[in-house]
Length: 151
Image (cartoon, rainbow, N blue to C red; front, side):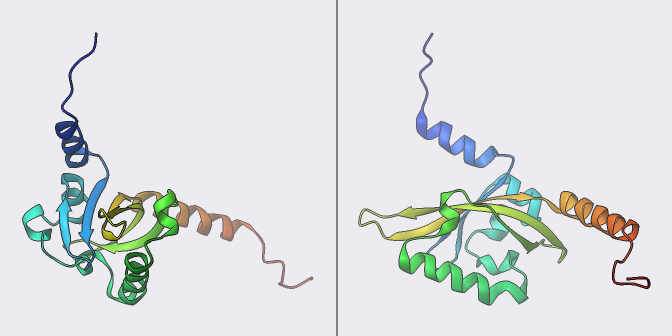
């Protein structure tokens, strides 16, 4: 049996309720959409985030690099991350804590094919990142240093 579906309602529900953070920033890097998972992951409410710069979640030491890439994407209309490649970076929470996130982006274009903003789908991978780091430390402690005595 076919059920009628309101595609607009479906899309809005999907982006609002998605388990990953979904953030849309306009061409100037101002946040225009912030879903519930973004609230959970970053600690900022929708009201606190809307109208603010993406700088609120970008660690200060990474901002120059971020804005260079963001500006190049807006100017050129292309990015390698729009094809599904995942980028892993540190990010900031409202409480000042750093987390590890993975994200991919979707550029939004106007009727003239110019990028007018970028949506990002982000996932908090802090626990996994810390687990991998701990396993690497354990492994490093078990493997003898081959540059030591006797070599």
